[in-house]
Image 1 (cartoon, rainbow, N blue to C red):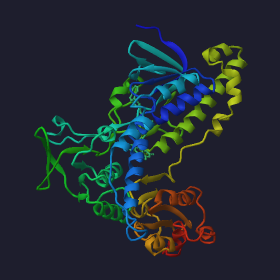
Image 2 (cartoon, rainbow, N blue to C red; image 1 turned 90 degrees about the vertical axis):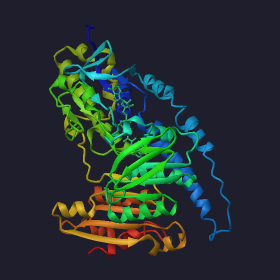
Image 3 (cartoon, rainbow, N blue to C red; image 1 turned 90 degrees about the horizontal axis):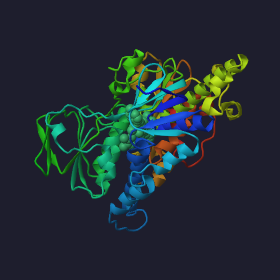
Image 4 (cartoon, rainbow, N blue to C red; image 1 turned 135 degrees about the vertical axis):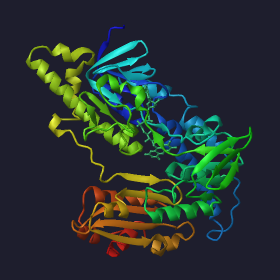
Length: 490
Ligand SMILES: Cc1cc2nc3c(=O)[nH]c(=O)nc-3n(C[C@H](O)[C@H](O)[C@H](O)COP(=O)(O)OP(=O)(O)OC[C@H]3O[C@@H](n4cnc5c(N)ncnc54)[C@H](O)[C@@H]3O)c2cc1C
């Protein structure tokens, strides 16, 4: 068996969260091994946030051009997917090549090891024949993969996941989207706006079921206006592919299309991580962590894997805490070693003393921030955008909170009225009447995700309602509707 190689930290999975942790710790002077089996950067830059938002930007440009009629003359729109595919290939993903990201990590002093990493006992990670032992600990950032439901026949068909949908160069004539969550709706609207006949099939009784029912209604209406067929309450039972077309059966109905996109959620693959070698149960949906992202002693996890929300901003937020925690741990270890005159034990390859002291990103363990998800923002980038933070009305009621709700439609605001076509949306506020603060909010509209920022501050900082009511909202903005919704709280 190979002798373990001693390093400071091993990061397994260099997606958004792992890459941030690995880069920043390497930059701070620790010896960091980053293990990645696919592309450095993970899902977000290659098959997630960035290319999908490029697609949405293009689709929204088409939709805006179609709104010229009646507002500013006439416009003829001829959609063409080629510039979108080219931009994703050339600007976003370098044709799915991670050289730039890999070199950035190496340039910061990190060591990139290509392959699948798994735990191999406390503080140890095995990658093929190589074994690394981490002085300070191991960070798991292995993300999630599409969760494909066990529908009869599905596994034998050439269905798409988000990977094929993002990589597509030529659009199909028709597309079935299985799953009416955020990713399904975003992609369904994009493809519909480029002329694809899109059908969304959702098992639950409404699309975007984790958000407020009013948000589901606006989203469904917006997609239908773009020509998308939406079928809710339909549980898919069987999928067939005859070599050309897909047929999906469920709820007594049959749907056919050239392509089938499966976007029914994401799943962490814990069984591959060797968790049993450190006494942890791998048969869980996600890896539970505490508020400093500890899985257990000397093991941290970041990102989708933790089940705290599958968002890049969660992965980055958690990464910040892990970095602070590990730097504090490293400082303490160094201080202990200095005091006992054994500093070489900690120094090793990290050249650490000077850079750790200078990095200033964290203080003692006592000052390491704790994760707090009360004001977790989420944006579904459909048009209109659906932004939400904190609790929905139903979640708040289920917790026994004395709830007040305020609601206003964007179309009845001055800005919405001026905007006219494309002004669908609303502000919904959920307040804790006893505490006098907002605990949740939804902002739907042309800039719903941007308007959300004010509401995130309000929930995060528990700004008293009395203060929110007595601040000045610029006229005529979309965010001014927040003031109207505050006036409606009852
Ligand atoms: C279509 C789509 C659109 C999205 N849009 C948004 C958006 O607009 N905003 C937003 O906030 N979020 C969005 N997301 C979610 C976002 O992409 C994820 O939340 C984010 O990528 C999670 O980062 P992560 O670090 O947890 O994992 P990932 O990005 O999944 O990276 C995990 C990495 O670990 C590697 N890995 C796994 N196992 C091993 C192993 N054993 N050894 C070595 N390497 C391993 C994988 O190859 C991968 O590179 C979107 C996702 C999708 C699919």
